[in-house]
Length: 402
Image (cartoon, rainbow, N blue to C red; front, side, top):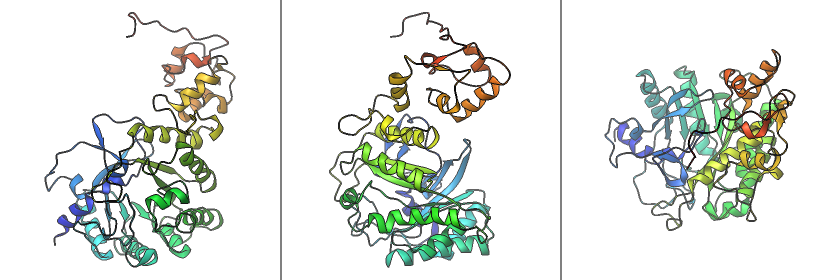
């Protein structure tokens, strides 16, 4: 079978694997794919030369730049029977497998042709996680050593991989991911009954951080350790937002994860969960917002607006909800507030805080226009700040807002 056909078969569900930066806003005119990834609506039978049809997507990188990357798998065969997964054992569809040297050559041919600049490489599990991880490592070594590839490489860590394999994967990759899928062992048993939550999934994430802290990357291809990420399937087994965010907050603090991905569940044909309803994509969006508040803004779990069932409101931004409770009557004085106070104001992020602190060294900030001049948007912050001791003057709309 030709390589193009194999890539197209593998790519059928690879849009479910998130990488790069999540979108800041919920995209419009999209649909929820299996496992919840939001994807653009596309023709049911894309042409063979369509880049997406062979697994090429544009990852959003830090700073907003995009990177064309091939997202693919060494094999879509798998011995695990995860109930939500399109690659689960026993599901009837055509499987494809690449050998490590074949995958490396295929990617480099695409790279030299200018089609891609990065590779996201995963795999189904065959003959156990150790054997499968060896094949992922072999592919990465061929790319780095034989082809002298120096670009972006994201490798999956397979359930059951050993610590030495994790270390070698770290020496070859820019990013590693270990997908937890569920927030605890009880929920995982309902999603993926053959996976072990602590031994197979949590422990590799701990190893990655231990190696980063205690070892020098002297054998790494670029003399730097990679970042690490994980992913959750949201809404398939009745877990609450609180359950997901408890483990998220712990992993951000303990394992220094660069990113946590949340994928709203949507059923896949011919799986045990095919008749369950899809989860609301806005829930995925709120979880992203909240995890960013933990990672970048100094918020903690007790400050989040959970309802009695442990879920976040779908109709309100969690940072705005906090501000409405705490800042409407006690606004932040922009000219005197510390960084930790400024960053909690709606509409102000890490870059905005830096600009405000720099501007204060030049003089007082007295008007909203002063903030706009330094690149700080003011639409959302007006109700929550003081400028030189005064509430900012707000321009009323010419016509009533309907």
